[in-house]
Length: 218
Image (cartoon, rainbow, N blue to C red; front, side, top):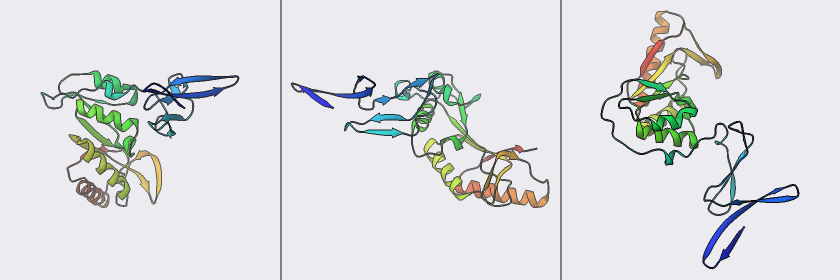
């Protein structure tokens, strides 16, 4: 609810509890959340500037600080050298590091969404460091072409984050619409080689750039 004192106005939100009310000072986006061992126990409500609440579907998981408070744009003086795998629990540390040549690798499958905290964090890290996208779900060794929807989602990430490297496992994990949560080996045959070469070409054409291929799965 809103109330006025002269020309000053403040927004307040009341949370009803048994026998009493708690008053939360309003912000433009105030998160109503209960934390349990660093994770959220249920849905997160966000307050908008119009006094409305909506469910933040992407706020479940580790609680993270606002990347806008930590990031500051700078220029890389050297090319990429040693890189690290980037996990959500390391976002703040990644932004705090200022080593020239440091880069971070992520699995693009974890960022194939249209918005949310993960993408905001990745954008903040990208302003500070080069990124590498290392895919695990293209299923290049399958006996069928790569999924068109997966290719389109990866292309959106490539265009958005401009990674200096895009790479992919040489294995298969999907077939006829079924997904197997593993990187499975494939026959070492001329037919398999031709199929892999064709799928790699399809991937590179869709992305408009070369792709590095990891050693075949065993």
